[in-house]
Length: 374
Image 1 (cartoon, rainbow, N blue to C red):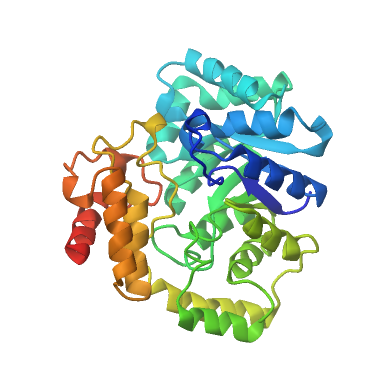
Image 2: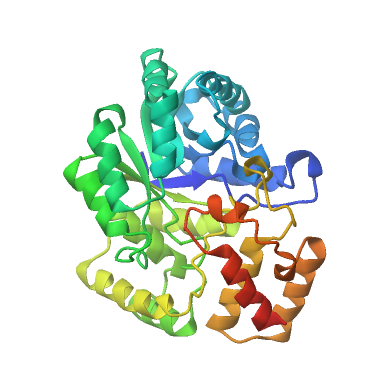
């Protein structure tokens, strides 16, 4: 299996409300190009695109291609599980939406200490083993958003029940205290020898749109490669990594990713040094480590009661720090506020913070955004 995975959480948008603003024509063209070039791994979830991502996969992939042409991963949203019977109810709905009889990989989604405890209480791991015995899951696992200590605790208890772990790995979070990419990787891949699926290799696009100083460092070593290529190749170079997900939003991003991943070459020793140097520059430019996952605002998790597009405002906040506070950024801020709530409308309910995989103190950060753009 080629290591470039198609993440179905940032698909191209249109004005088609029927598909929750997903542009089906552009997405279909991307799917066809991806498969035509020998790639096959699709990653979706119950929550992506307001609950439409799995259905789009079913329509554009499962209905149009023979089963041997693709692998698919989806995930159990434990925040929607209130009793043991909910596992089977949700799972069966996912099979129907995705149009398949089994999932190649299946995860407990966005796991942290509280969700691990909930999964144990309600029988989440037992459910995945049951589905594996019935042939409906080939390889069970979980995606993870917590500390290395929690990962160690979870794997001590459940290492025999999982085969693949999805971790957030990128070159600026590798040594961070919050994400702790290296420490989590060493526990999962090193100590427990698990396969690794990598999410957020570009940190929600932050490593595709870097400061001019960081871009200069990367381009000096590989002038013909895109800035984004460094993040994908960095993650794909690690042992035990079987796939690196990219949430591609247009054909240009897909074509770029395929250009260097079709015949993948791991980073050379001097390239690793270049990445480390660029990473230090980039870290100083990111004020809020938001990846744009939209878990904080998605209606399937309850959403923001004030309809604030939190990731969009954080993106604008980071952009003004990378470059400068231009009239264009101010205009975009105003437009975002017209479509929903503005940072000034935040009521401090904390719902968003409860769903943020990055553990961002969203309420406090929105106050800073408001002050800058006031």
